[in-house]
Length: 592
Image 1 (cartoon, rainbow, N blue to C red):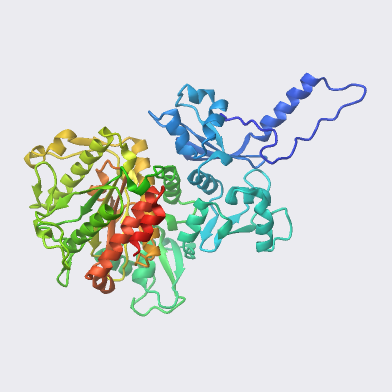
Image 2 (cartoon, rainbow, N blue to C red; image 1 turned 30 degrees about the horizontal axis):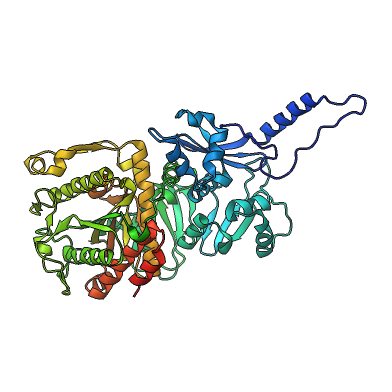
């Protein structure tokens, strides 16, 4: 369907009200048919339209039928377009029958797809666009009635949207103690987690209750107020949580600024319940007021990227290539805290992951850096100091910056070969392994993905050290199309969510507030690490497996047992990312 609808009932299942006829002057059949067609068209005409991106918009009709209107991306085939929007094998025939322009590959048109045909992630995009006040928590989903169709949405529709079955309205009504079938604007309807469709259930089980912020303004400007709870500190519970800053110097500096703004003389002794004012400009976008331009831009960007998730399924990871990048190595030790070296820990971790993948799956493993000897079975991998970037020819890690750049050139070369061999871009994954040195209050794993807005422009290096490598000569400069940038953020977030889920299942420490981040903040500057920014592999992430400046993290990372648990969790995430037959068996083996 194009921007006009087709069903006369607006998706409600109710028949249009018949037109009265006079016994003496009956309405001619042709006129009656024309009138009924007009009513049907009006029933599915959009009452409200929300633009998610230039290629995507969501609408709702008076009959509460939701549509997602999408425009094919440049060079996107009809099959790829339909596969992107829906996982229903019958959907292609349905969509093509009602959208002749799509068959002609006219990329300027918007194709309207009914909610019932959408894949899980697109259903979530549609609902979040229409109902931005909705919230998920571990117990389920809270839907706020806002009447976007011009009247309060029915319990039947709410059940249909969130659970896939309108008949579930009875249980929703019973569980919530809802007195009437009719709803009212502002009413909160609770959908239990066990009834939710997978995409909504995943967010509900992953999300914590959002912090309570109040907004105001005084002579110093606009601010958000957060009341400290018992045991919470200004560093971790305010600065780290709400401003996105993690590095010690940034956290300390911002804590001092906020303390001065609030007249706090001693940040170590702030009473529980104290209302801390945080300047709006210091807040991460997701914590700003709902009408803040940066928050609106961030939410639209997130919804846009959510179009893309991994759809490839691989039995026992057959045909999949994993590019494992152990950070630093050679002369570059990475962070050193109390004698413990980052490069040593992550090189050992890469060795363990490679062994697990080769032992339990049919995947191919390529490591960006290798020593001249084998990994071995000792407490620490002995040859990490001899690690070289495995370009052609290999590069001894004499300079850390050059080493990083040659790694992404190598990753891009590996992807090109995979595409030439027929694997496509969907069967290659890149993971860079690190252990951070942040503020001591920060602990647990954190995963970075490539934020779309940080990937714009053209990139390339120059100089003899690069020109002498085959991987550089294959493609000295790179740039990404808008589709590639959005796809990279979406698929990489899908991978990161699988890692977070695996860490939670294995009871491994994760960053308490935002374990997945689309950029770094340091010294007032925002950016994406080069290893992700210039990398062409769509599914790519950088994981900081712990914070060496945190005593608990450092103690864990120093043990062989913990590194083995992390390796097994990461491989388990890879298996989950590709799903397919054999997933349960491989996962069970990894847990032994």
